[in-house]
Image 1 (cartoon, protein in one colour):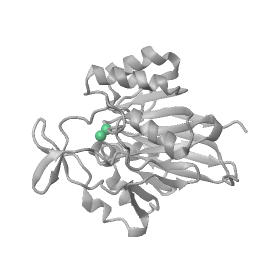
Image 2 (cartoon, rainbow, N blue to C red):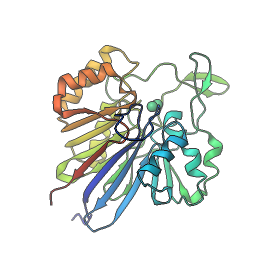
Image 3 (cartoon, protein in one colour):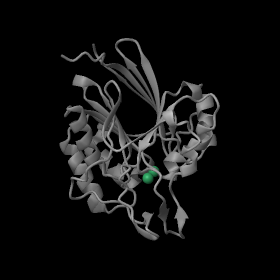
Length: 293
Ligand SMILES: [Fe+2]
Ligand SMILES: [Fe+2]
């Protein structure tokens, strides 16, 4: 028998995205940060921050405008190491009132570089994590249920034959730069039972379809209510974009929200295929899910 309380309501707020609707005084920057407020039927709730954008100040500015306090964050989940998702972490970690648990892949501190236009570091500052007391750091590689019906996918198996890793990302291994398989890429998944699952992804370097496969698998729920994230189709081929959109169509997703590194070409294809079932998200957008009792 399932004794879980069940999620009653989920509210997602886009705290940072690359684009703005220019209807509020929030700041946009390259990167992604999404706040998830999750409420269970037994009355308890948790506040989860997913990624932190590129720099701390725009994130803290937006949090201040929206009256979100660092000390109210229960868990901070990092989707992967790239600076546009982890750069904002610095001032959150150093905030003396912070009590959040930091959750990330155990490979998140590997040294990663881009070579264009010249070599530069694109990963997370490893020393930063050592500033956190050990009990507030949770590093993982396998799927993990962090709260009741709230999952972190862990490493995503590369199953599809069309989703490719992005180009120009390298990891320093034994003194040499080799292509980075980006295995730290993970998503946050809410299982809303009969309503389906809600999947929040950062850059989807593992491939958004691969991510959805694993999300359905670990929750044992084949219904996808919504997927929200950057789908990193911006610098992949038109062929990859088309195959991705085609396969998303086979998954019967109720609503797709795209932003960040998805790219306009892919967003055009998504809009063409899904119509009102596709929406582009902007800084400040709020996406609500309420579960019928
Ligand atoms: Fe990104
Ligand atoms: Fe990325």
